[in-house]
Picture 1 (cartoon, rainbow, N blue to C red):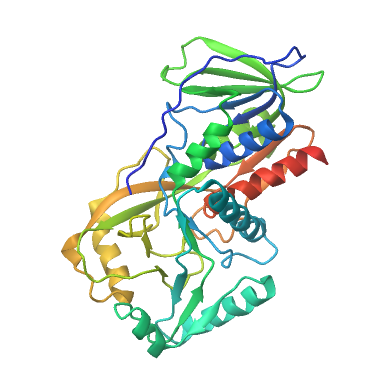
Picture 2: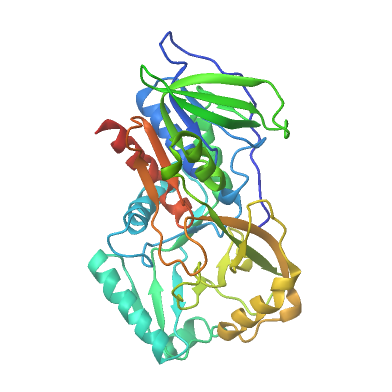
Amino acid sequence: MRARTLQIQRRLFSSKTPRSSDFAHCVIGGGVVGLAVASRLATKYQKPTLLIERHGEVGTETSSRNSEVIHAGIYYPEKSLKTRLCIRGKQLLYELCEKQRIPHRRLGKWILAQNEQERSVLEELHEKCERLEVPTEFITKAEAERIEPAVHSPFGVLSSPTTGIVSSHDLMTYLTGLLEPFDIALQTSVVDINKLRGGGYEVITCNSTDTDGSGERTAITADIVVNAAGLNACHVSNMLLPPLRHVTPFYAKGNYFSYSASQPRVSRLIYPCPVEGLGGLGTHLTLDMAGRMRFGPDVEWVDGPEDLVARDSRLAEAVEAVAVYLPGLQREALVADYCGIRPKLRPKSGGFQDFVVREEERCPGFVNLLGIESPGLTASLAIAEMVDEILTW
């Protein structure tokens, strides 16, 4: 899938009701998480809400450059936010998709074991899933060969039946529609944030097309500011917080590869056994809503988030990884297609890093969402729920 965009009309800042601040809520970042947060706060409280997006359309960064997988919540430490928000988000997302007829499919996922060591890893995953009450089951080699004859997994398969896929485009279109009565500022970059003495925040913006920063600046005030800026979230956070609390971002690029041949075919998502410290879940096989196969993402550590060109130079490594579990792969039919960037809070081999979802100390009403990578799409509605809970404590 190539990156897809959403068309929405740019509107000027406005205030719906007289108040001391221009807005009750200001959400920075128009990806799926920012849309989920803004739409929840706006529709629940019916107060003036502003969503700020630096691009000309919403959802053009990480939210439209991923596998579109609804994750089950099985890979992360049991007590982590990633696990909790993924499991809760999966429930909320399936409920929303079914109610609003947002295209999605519960395809299920297989995680494969190629040797005894990987089998042990899958057994540990299965035991953890039992504790978390996340459904998983083992499938024998013989049964796996009968169901998916093209897939090679000599030491068995761990099946995750609640994993699925969703059209991120249609999901974001729905969430954007909920914000129609409110305010969306496109092509608008946040250049500074100031805490106001009487409470609330001043958010200073400029037009994103003024790349040299010389354009006219606009200041708005908001009682609550939620930083959901994704790849730019650390930069936004550092505008407000003192230097000792600054955060350094890291970036893991993921290249995706499309497959044009009709064979071999599979009917579910196929994942290799997870490797600790890799930075991702391995080059896996996913399906889009039309049933087309694609592979990725791989992991390529880069210096910044600007490089969004899929690299042919990564193809040989991807073919090698995929051929392990799909030996009938027609290698000439696999081509570099698109890529995305994962926002990381630790460098390569830096160990597990959880989501950061918190109201910052001495900054009441300022909520930071940092390091929201996978499973951010799955967790988006749960993250919005958590932000709401934080603000009402």
